[in-house]
Image (spheres, rainbow, N blue to C red):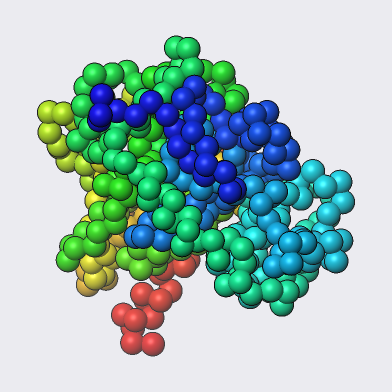
Length: 486
C-alpha cells in the first residue's frame, strides 16, 4: 500500500505530530484542549462566530508558508495534514517574554474578563505580521470575527496601534523559523492518499484531483469537506455524522485562480480571502460586499465552491455570481460538464449534482462595456452575520435603454433565484427612475419569502424593492449626467 498513508502529519507549534486514530468529526479545538492541554485556545460558541478559539494555520504556497487565522472549533483535525498550527502558547518576544502584541494589550488594558483575549491576540498577531502599521479600517477587518463583550474594543484598537511601534515582524520568531518550517512541511508532503479513522468515523484525503474522482466513485454518498465553515456546524451543533468525509482543501488543483481574455476561473477550494484580490480587480463593485461576508477567520477558511455546493438559499456568493452570468464546472470519474450557476439550484436542499460528482470551479465572464453592476447585502449585524436579503444586479445599457438585466436574490426563496418579472420590467425600457420603480413593484410578484428570526416576509419584500431603487439612486445619476454631457 505504498500509495496510501494511514496517519495525519502536521506541526503543532514546534512539535511534529503524527496521528493514526483520527475521526472525520474530530476538531482541532478538542485536540488542543483535551489531548494537548493547550487551554489558551477557548471554546466560546463552537460555531465559528466568536473568535475565542482563533489560532494560526500555515500551509505551503509557492514554496513559502502562508499563515491565516482560523476558528479551531470548526476546523477538522484531518484537514491539517501538512500544515503548521500555531497557538497562543507559541507566541513570544525576541527576549522570550511577552510578544509585542501581548504587551500592547496589557499596556492598553485591552483585556477585562480575559476569555476572548487569546483569540483577539492571535488575530492582531496575524495582522501585525502582515501589516505592521495598520489603518483603523484594517484593524476593524482583522477583528470582525472576534467578539468581546467587555471592552467596547477601544483599548483593543489602542493595542493594535501600539503594537506597530513595538517590534519588527521580520525579527519575530515565527518569521525567523519560516524557512525551516517550509522545509519541514515540504518533507511531510509525500503525495499519497491519506485514510484515517476512529472506529467507524472515517476521513479520506485524496492524493490528487483524479484521485478525488476515484474516491467519490467508490463513496458517492461521502461528505465533501473543503473549508468546513458549514459542515463544521453540522457536527458541533446538529451532532450530524459526516462519515466518510472526503477532505479536499489540500488539493492544489482546486486552489487555482486563472484569468483569461474573457473569463475569470476560480477553483472550488479557493477561499474567500484568496479570491478577494482577483474579484476586486475584475469586479470592483464586489469589494465592499466581499468584506461583509462573515469575519476574517471564516473568509480564510470558507471556500467559493463550498458556498455554492451546499445550495443554501442564503449563501452570499450565488446571487452576485448568478447576476454576473457565472457557469459551474462539475466533474466526476465520468468527465466534466458546464452548467449555468442558476440551473444548479433545483429546489430547497436539492442541486443538479449527479452521484460521484463535485464542483471543480466557477467561471465568471469578465465585465463588458456599458454594463452597470451592484451587489448588496442586508443583515441584522453589519459584520460577521448571515444574510437576510442579498442581491446581485447587472444591467446593460445601450443608447439610453436597458438592453439586458440580470437580477438574482438570496434569502427570498427556497434557492438563490433570478427576479424574472423585475428583469422583464426593465428590458427595453429607458434607463430611468421610472423603469426601476416599475421593477421595484414587479419584484413583489417574483417571490413569496418566508418569515424567520432573521427577517419577516414583509420586511424581505420591502427590502428587495428598495434595493432596486437604491441601484438607480447610485447608478442612475452618473449615467444620465454622462448622456447629457454634464
